[in-house]
Length: 531
Ligand code: TNX
Image (cartoon, rainbow, N blue to C red):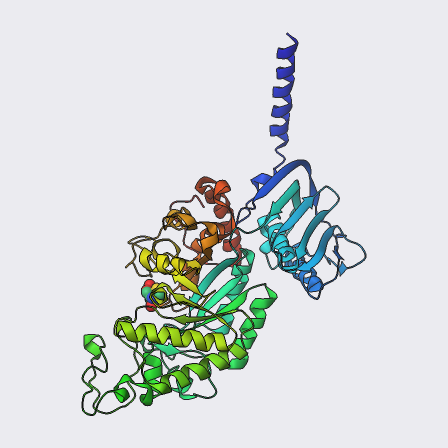
């Protein structure tokens, strides 16, 4: 009797709770999903009096506080002062390490974000921004109750490298658009932006000791457009802009294949120079429509098509290594991050032995300038230096295993899951499909450790989503291919598999779609989600 009355009471209480419809913290649409969310009852509300209070020391603490304030001011219209004195949004830096973990405590009185690292604090800020109603992304004042359910969050990334790549070689991407992309990456807690700076169709970074690379090699792009390049000053500007958002730039010089833009700029680097007199017939193995038989060592023609795998450096020519040395030195000097990407993919016309010789010599050069090499997975057919990384893309598990056996970590970019340039389905207006179609659920539903037998988290450095740009010519194209898939990859890289669920992500990403609509992001409205 007593028991049944009690359960009646329970039902009534639950029903009442449902009527009040006070949202729970765990119903929020945070991407990537935090590792742990606990609910409480009640809510915190931002008011015209709310300020940000900083606790701790650290160069970047004030900047992080200002970053939060700047994101909150336009839509709320509130002042949101940042100080060390008072405030209901508390940012506490409890150490001076580079921890990416953070905790958030939300009570009715205050929101406190704490981390022992600046990066962690920045990520806590990103999470809090996603907890506010979607209107917070507006650039003009909105009348909304700026409320967040109470509770707590404990979070940290599963993988230390969470990246995306922009191919600025096939089509040049303006600094403005690169910054735009960086802004979006920061929201989803990415920490590496890989810039594919060179390819057959274009050379996009100023090298002072080899000026024709940009004069000639930078002058066009796929389809014959004007191309373009970053001066070293502009590259530094990108590096700094990314660093402010806790994103590290990884520059890539793709070699020994994918190098026609170099060979078009400097004839003396053409493989022909190395061959005995008169025997230049094998110099270029270009696609048929582009076949040129070089009779004398001379620059090759600029290329604006999209075939891959037909160009190569002269790997036995000393001048090639003098060239690689200068390029690596100049770029390393303006790259604070630890990695230098040496490409190494699809060198179909480089003899096997020459390829291995080349990769090993280039690794030494990179290491001489204090950087760690990353290479596309084919580099694992050479002897990798300790600590160097192989980027798994080709689905050639053999290459990943070769790297693993040598004790080197893998960066995961499986083309069937993580390639942002693949079409979603046969109706996609741009994109390629040589690796199949990659719908949103396919980009989301995979686990980095489960692609190659026997791999554990320790074998994997992280995850990266490349955006190749053969078919990408403007910001709308970037939007369409990167969103929403970039957010799926963010969650694969950040959230441990035990708490990831497609059904949950699907609900959350739809809410991000509402934010993108407000911001004018022209994302792909995948039919797998109800937007
Ligand atoms: C293969 S992925 C390439 C790129 C192309 C891409 C197009 C990789 C390491 N090489 O050169 O842009 O396919 O999807």
